[in-house]
Length: 287
Image (cartoon, rainbow, N blue to C red; front, side):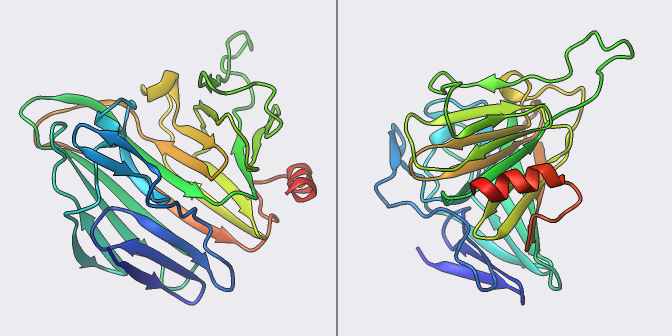
């Protein structure tokens, strides 16, 4: 499989020609922000071996074996769209879900728009949610804004939650829990760490090598999300950190398509209005 390239003066995107994978997200003058894994990294399923490879991929949630891990190495059809490409995969065997991705690179700014699609090509309705996962190199700090303020006028109801996976240690030194932000310091360690929550702000970020990578996506309050209500999740192990956004759960009829959009941005510093000075100083001191 070969790589193809989209680029402007400030950013280069690399993607595979046979699969729905983005393997390179490269700011001008900087190394690739995405993780690249060996060909041996993967999971065996009854339908063949799923290869993680690194970079960005599209799954459907909730996670299950073997449904989530259907092999996706071959079969991509690539066509041009304005300022980018559309990648379409054939429907997966057994799940009958077809994945597509449109990548549009802003010609004038370090910004990418990713339009993820999941179509039910099967004979009956299936419940799932779109799930966009971006695997980045270790060495940085991931930033997750928290809900603040009252959920009701009297301040009697809970205003946030945190989903914690069974292998996660609450005392993990990589994890910083604050009232305003959660930070994950992406250093290599085992066991893995995974947490998730409903993020009403609709963005998450990763600070690495003097570059702030921001993922933006819609946050729909009041809708049902996977994993006890998560639209934002992160997973970190000894090889990479993932920034994951999710859409709401839907019953998808035959022939129906779910859509999930992410906007990726690059900033040359932490000096941006959506990250307060105290957090900027904390991240700069520990990254």
